[in-house]
Image 1 (cartoon, rainbow, N blue to C red):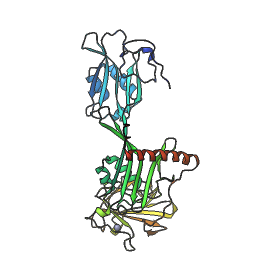
Image 2 (image 1 turned 120 degrees about the vertical axis):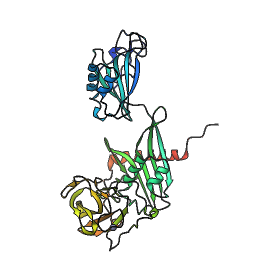
Image 3 (image 1 turned 90 degrees about the vertical axis):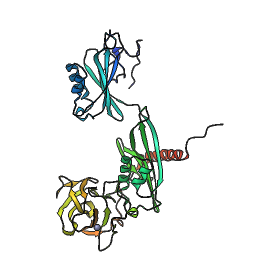
Image 4 (image 1 turned 60 degrees about the horizontal axis):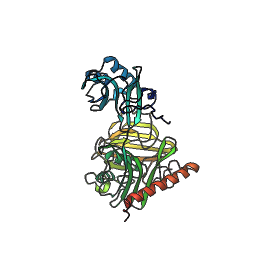
Length: 412
Ligand SMILES: [Zn+2]
């Protein structure tokens, strides 16, 4: 929507009030009190623990009526119960008649999240009008490539990826890779995501993973983030196949589980006829995730298994989880669960030598080796979406190549 340019000349800090129509973003420095001589004053306040916005404003000397008016209006663009302690609120006060003395509140602004600023400004009739706008942040691509020495998580962080990004990477690969047994020394990974910075260079936020690849033994997995439908972002491999599988290969939610080759304390048992499951060594309390959508068919103590959960999925599959420390709150028999939902926590209950998750996959009631299981993959892109994906993939591949090669050499 084009915003009409101001036609009336005037001081930079005092745009003509006619410009201020409801719904239009307000300029950062506006003053709505015609006739005031002095320049507006900005005051930065910090939200204290347990302090409401109204308390903050009245404490700063703002008229109670104004404080309530501002809060009521600001609540239309932001949940005021979620104010963060230490968050900065910048007030704009009209210039007072006496130099150095501030006048009435003409507006305020604050960060809603890393990318959004919200605020209110006073209109000429004295009422307040809210606004919401994108913050100006610098965006730079972050490209990381490295070899795995101990675990995907540790080595990702060692190469400069933030922990939150590595948890997402872990989740992305947890569909298709047993991240404890399948990761081998010499495996390599590559990541691409954005970093958003403030004007002073401080990191404001990291974007979603745009691309993640894992060279895992002989297989190369690579996933691209793509808007498959308006507003829906999913990950697809180079051929347009979805990253999701019916069952997770790694049903844990902790990027910190170490690869089996780097693990010494806990003996990792592989699948055998005697054992009939796979063990994930993980610290006590590590969240356990439902491997797929399904219904809880068992939840309770089961002899040597200790605290035990079994979930029935479609297609004749069931998954079982043993030696839990505790179950997720509200989880009981008959409950429906979604893939990835936390169902319990790693422990050492029953016949167990140390904290670990014993995980079984059952097909028609019999335990099978999950590693050998050929699960149907998730959705595949077709037609128009596949064509769009092809273009997107080429763009990302080109970007990766450019980032790997570095900036252009200066012309002689
Ligand atoms: Zn086991």
